[in-house]
Length: 276
Ligand code: CUA
Image 1 (cartoon, rainbow, N blue to C red):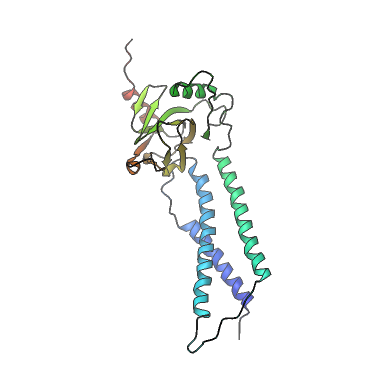
Image 2 (spheres, rainbow, N blue to C red):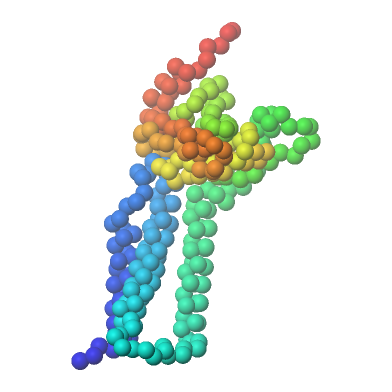
């Protein structure tokens, strides 16, 4: 008895969907999640992984099947059949990717919005940040300053911890303006929004903490903010993710996430003594 090809295709499709589901839910290629952004990002990653697995296995499967099923048999010297176009197949392979790409585009936008990416960067209340960034850059009077990109704190969030980040060949330097601490490593408490104010001194760098699922380009002359809330104690790598020169590969630091009490102790021991 021959099983109709429509049934076989249906079974193969269902197997692919189950495989994609399994890979997305049970295979974890990501590092530990240490910020409140991470679960949002991971949700998108799982969807991408499921779709990617279905496409990879499905297309590779068809190629391997065709190699075996339609191989040249011994003594076969004929040409293959002259196939010229197949409208329904062409419609199918145009419509499916169009729907998938459109869905992923809209879904990615939604994820970025949920991470705070669509908050107005130059909203009222950010003015003082702009002014501080301007003073750091020693800009000319009248030079119109604005924040160019990144993720701003939710408006009305007064509890943010500001940290100025200077990226230069080949290091990140962290400065806590309210405590007057300068440090080569970033220290943050759990459960508090941290607002990084990034600037680059020379060339384009990128600030990346895989465990926080955040990465932000830092471009000279373009003040940028990046807000996150750490929620897991630990010591995580900070990686420059933009080729910035011969020692780009060595441009690394790390972020120490502590309980608020331990963080307060770190602040206390590192705050410079005032001469008053
Ligand atoms: Cu800085 Cu790569």
